[in-house]
Length: 245
Ligand SMILES: NC(=O)c1ccc[n+]([C@@H]2O[C@H](COP(=O)([O-])OP(=O)(O)OC[C@H]3O[C@@H](n4cnc5c(N)ncnc54)[C@H](OP(=O)(O)O)[C@@H]3O)[C@@H](O)[C@H]2O)c1
Image 1: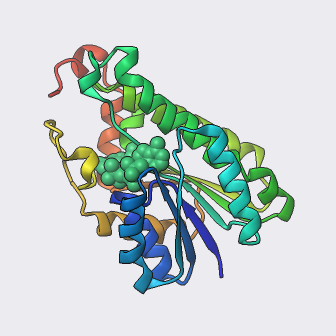
Image 2: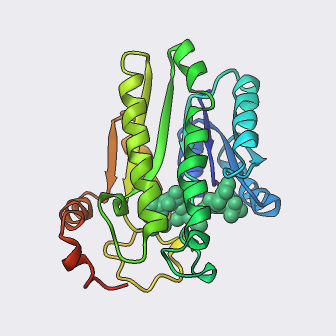
């Protein structure tokens, strides 16, 4: 049975992805920082198939690498690794351009994702089997107001995944960047900016997992918004400065 590792699977998109993979006959391990939230997620997911949880902070890089390598050995080789854990900017820490506000998102959304994606990559290449998936965002196409903490690590994640895809060509390992629009999760609960084509978690997760089956280089969901985001990303900064914050 193929085994999927999903970081940040205790709620939101990660929980939805876990449900989709279980329903497709995969075994799934989810991670998150909070044990009670993981326990609740496992209870929700168990009726759908074999699921386990690992309490791991994606920002704790050594623990992430060690934890994923141990899991890889335990399950006889992970088939899919999804770097999904992510946080937004923390406005309580100060100006959106201050180190305090951006530090955690940079650490978790980029460095933590990099540790997640590369921890077992050499082992995947050796066995000539595996699929790496990074959950990026349509916000990675270009600068947005008050969004350094979010846009920068997602743009970096895109580049990391591009490089990994290049380096693993012909090895049997696929690398996919998921560029996602708005999903109704805790992350956007307090957002005040417009969220066109906002998706329900299950809808977004179904679309993503269906698209991932073909192991494409890039998945964009929803497609129509992706085009708008691409055009918007290229707008001059003087125009973007007038966008709603
Ligand atoms: N929602 C959107 O509109 C949207 C749009 C584009 C892309 N995305 C991306 O989709 C991914 C999932 O976001 P979401 O909307 O589902 O957010 P969410 O509802 O806030 O869920 C985030 C998940 O990540 C976990 N997490 C957070 N920090 C972590 C850490 N340091 N280590 C391990 N797990 C951690 C959380 O659990 P704990 O807090 O218990 O650790 C939770 O399970 C993120 O990468 C996000 O950037 C979301």
